Length: 439
Image (tube, rainbow, N blue to C red; front, side):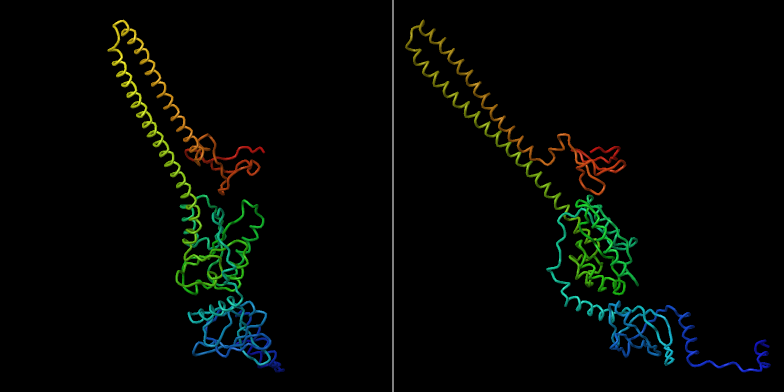
């Protein structure tokens, strides 16, 4: 037999009964200790927003319901206002309203659950921000033409970062990537992303003009509507809009747009597409350089062919004219010789031969001078074109030295011993390290 029960048979005094207040207080203490944090999902019914700002409603699963309260000091942080008929997921602690003995759930976090609730919450937030003008085209900033440093705000282990990294390292090796890891899904994800944006902007303010971050990619891979819900957060949208660094939203869901897509400076359908946008600027510049190089080569070849053709035409014309002159001289000489005596003829022949030799020598000299002049003209044209070539400086023995982040090194004070360098030569590239640095 239970000893305490046996002892109670001999107690001379009866135990004092609890008051209702004492009982309710004890029950409340037990409930709040045992159920300090619980997740509950159900349909909202009888939603009321009191004049005090508090929310009161019931959660119903079809067979049972529980009273809920969300105090004004808590619900101002909730970006979605519940309404009757929508399914929500709430986190809170069980408690007892001692004055009436009502069992209730004190809500600390609330988010929509299911497609209908998500759609309703999305439209609420979208309409509110649209009224404030946060989606205006006039607020959107252009992405820099040639981004050199890119911050990527996403999960460190997700596919989104790997896709962005692969595209940029393959197509734009001069672009420096800064990964800012963050949650992209679940409770706290929106606040995590918002904090990452603030951290990047704060860090950017400490950098010099040549080291500034040019653009920020914010996003993740695809998923369900619930998986992507963090990117519909109102406070995250305001953080994107207030960022000093232009933002590309890259939430991997090609059909539907998130709130982040609407408020960002540029929207990319997938993380890979965002990287293609950044990488495409460098490819445009390289394409233009290759086009200029090809054009210069074509101009040089045309000039050389034109000069050679003119030289051949001039030489042929000179030879033809000279042959005709010699033939006319011979004809005149023959006519005169027939009228001369043998002695005079001999003298005339000798003089004619001398004159002929002189003409031949002049013709040879004239041809050499003409050809030399044309060659000099071609060489001057080639020298001018060569001076315009982008590779001319490198071919003269100079080189281009870059830091690890792709920035061109112009001052020895910008490096210290041990820093890694990349050196571009006329033929090939070198990886090097700084031994000493003197300004």
